[in-house]
Length: 373
Image 1 (cartoon, helix red, strand yellow):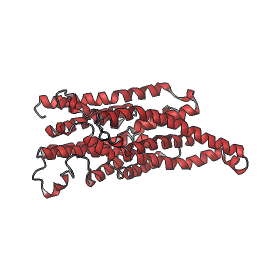
Image 2: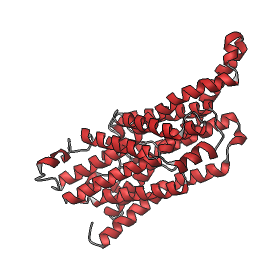
Image 3: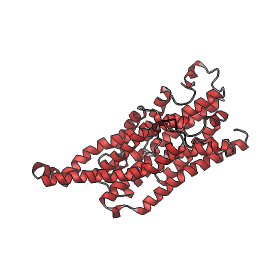
Image 4: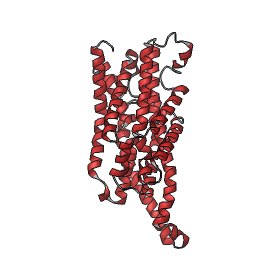
């Protein structure tokens, strides 16, 4: 049993690494597309800021560990987590290969749901749908933590992208109208120069927000695995060198420091390996970007991710940055958006949870048929 737990933890870290290079594009696509930073420097910036972001909170991790599926399902079979991870990982690799910016968050959540349903023999009660404990910020379940943010965060990304872009243009127009030195600063040359520097800050903010939200999801998976292993006695009589595996609490709400540090470093390493296929889609294929547009998109997306992480919502980094870019492109020129590319991205979004869930469901059924569940 201990061997299985270690295999699940290893699979979780592999998922975290893949999440890093799969979602690298979310942090740096715009700053590369606008030629503010060379790809190598952009990846390095994203990796460092992912690391910092991953170390600054665990609210999303607690949601994954205790707010999506009933822990009794995991306690009955650690293979549930393994199948969930493999389902999400498989879908991530498929969409990475196709260059589609799908959501690693929703792939993981879909994998969890699919594996839990299979293990519970299609008992939908294995999933936590909605549970309020008197504080909206702490509401649990798929309704509050997954489906509601899944709908609202792309809309918010698009609208905030439009609003930030219009606000920046309004400020530039006011400066031009004022005359004198301000008018000179409002000229395209100076605007591009200023936002070329400002976009480095917005890209760093985006990298931080990505780590702050995304890295926590694997932290939650590892915590959930250890809670289930503790309940089944798999962690009894651990050697002294592995004593740190005992979970800090019995409900998965407290995330051990070693889990936080390990996931942060692994995601940063994955980010450093790059993800050029998706960078090309986000940064070049949807709409042509200039530094001011990249600044607006990154600032909008990072703000949504940071707020969502505060409330423990595992929001998709991919959705927020993609729709922010769409919003900026729409504000620039509604006709500039390339609808064919956007349609492919939207289909990837729609299919992610059922596809990853279906893969995880099938894997658990295969293990069950082989007597390994």
